[in-house]
Image 1 (cartoon, rainbow, N blue to C red):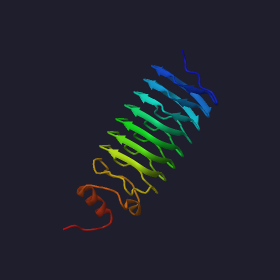
Image 2: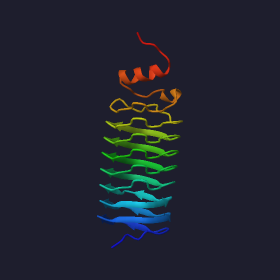
Image 3: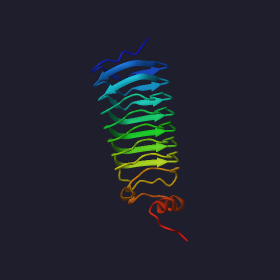
Image 4: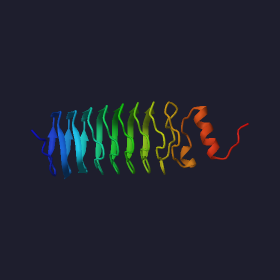
Length: 193
């Protein structure tokens, strides 16, 4: 059976497995205490969606729109979020483990107590985000964008950050390896002898 999604529908304590959710445009949808396993979202826009205590396992959420989402107390494990738009969102206490997030856009989102563990985040847009207690562990972040996002207290030392775009003033307080710091010093025009 197809999962029917429409404005203001709520899903509580349900498990969806091996499903396709296609061509949906809906507002104010709520998923609470829900597990989605091997679910593919195709051509989906969920504006102001709420995912609370929701677990995504091996799901494909690529290229879908989740603007103004509230994503709280959730886990994403082995999921594809390639090109996913999660802009102007509230994201709290969420774990992203071994997810593909290349080209995803999280612009303008407030993120608190978030863990990105072993994720691919190449060319991911994290512009204008407020990051509080966000950890990046062994992530591939080549050419990720952090425009107007302060990185104070953020540890990028275990990540590949080649070519990341960030304003130098937003680097204050970021934790880097000596080699990573050397790369940024070159951008400042510092000649190390």
